[in-house]
Length: 322
Image (cartoon, rainbow, N blue to C red; front, side, top):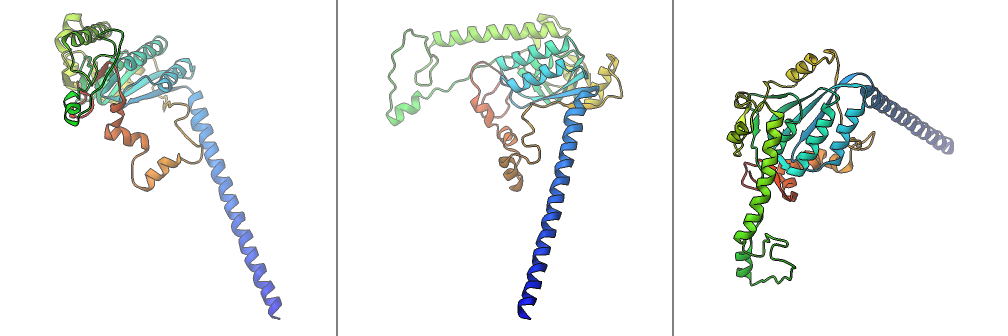
């Protein structure tokens, strides 16, 4: 009798296990189908139906091939009838701003493009905004900081204190200068001034060409100052006050349908896994931290890795400042 009872218990346990795995398999299939359906309609159908494309430019600007690819795909898509460039950036490298500026001008030659400024569009961030044909900013947005800067450390005093010297052999006096290991000479500073002023003149001409301002008017306000959105409207650096609603309204005035959905375009690999987020970001979520790329941005660490000529507004006393 005990053997039959044990067999009965084993069969019941097996039946429960089979039932559990059947339910688990069913739920996995349902989740997979749901995710696939959402991806199909949001990721494929969403960008194939007529719509307004939104492209976000946030954080420190660098030469970003993924962003340039997004702008190019938006330009080529027959489903995109208008574009909102949403900007929240203190600027970054001058070359990075130039690359994005040129790509937006290519886009604006084929579709109406408006910039919507969030908290900040300064320096190279404003350079990017000026590539569009209409700029909308909040009343308290920070706009401007037109200029170029180069910063470099000079640590000769520290090396003297710890007893370290650096020897070098080079082909000419200005090769690899300025160096943190040598005191900067007037000749080296003059070389940098000449280079910075050349890029500054280019920046001034660019703004004068894109805004309803003469070169003399741009020079009056291009001394590194930042302005609120309200001040920027008066100075004609910004066309209108508002947010996404006002940006859409301008697109409608340009002939874009007023019933079109706004669809955000992202880099091809920004979504990660189709069903699960990246492991690092999952860990960050468990710990209550922002995603890894957002954490770098919040700490300002991405700016440490900038090099070369900068068009960057940075009020904090860390990193690069304008």
